[in-house]
Amino acid sequence: MKIATYNVNGIRARLERLTEWLTETRPDVACLQEIKCQNEGFPLADIEAAGYHALVHGQKGFNGVAILSKQRAESVRIGLDGEPEDEMARYIEADVGGLRVASIYLPNGNPQPGPKFDYKLRWMERLRARAVELIALEIPVVLAGDYNVIPSDADIANPKAMADDALMQPESRAAFRRICTQGWTDALRQIHPTGPLWTFWDYQAGAWQRDAGFRIDHLLLSPEAADRLVDAGVDKDHRAREKASDHAATWVVLRN
DNA sequence: ATGCCCGCTTACAGCGGA
Image 1 (cartoon, rainbow, N blue to C red):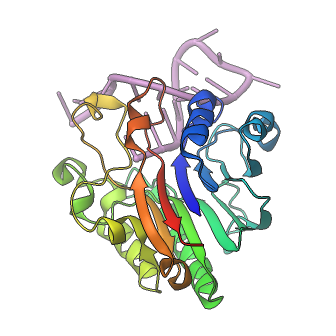
Image 2: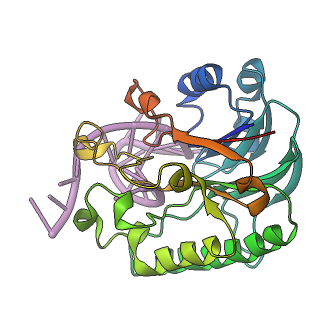
Image 3: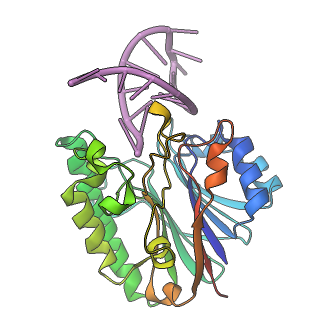
């Protein structure tokens, strides 16, 4: 099974690129982030025409997550516990093909310090609380998404330029590590332990042309999923195309 | 030091993104 995560940066603006990517790479499951549309605005007919079912947790203008799948998926939950007044559409979880899969859009947190950074850290604590419940199930789980965390200085082309950014603050990294150490495997680094492994290149300042990227899209595997890990990668070539998202799709293959 | 670029909005400028 191939499971991918893809921050599309607006599904309506990206529809042609997205269906092209689905057709060319045929993931069994695709976790999307930043669809930037409400449920009723989701281009379901186009996704179905590409051969996929969809579970959608949308929001007007910003955020929004979805799980696309060849097999029909069963929704398990929308949103995280712990902050009932939080209406940002950033989490959806489903059962599909014998796996539990979540599509995660973790808050950016800039500028830091400030209320947005505080929200990011609170959200990460809420995710940690859900992740430990999922580990306890002892089933194959894939937590896939845009974590907005650069886990280490090896995960960014120019760490000095981003030193004050919320994505690489010690608190952000510690919160990410606290989740990983529950027993999750960072699948991309498991398969590619060293070297550049970017998943995002800013639209600004020629970041793509300079290959000045960083790694923020992650797939965390429960032990039962990690036992089945055979490959992982980044669909970098699609980032070079016209009207591409600023993120590249990132994926794992699990043995059946 | 700031903005660069991009998508979105009862839009035509401002916000959020990373």
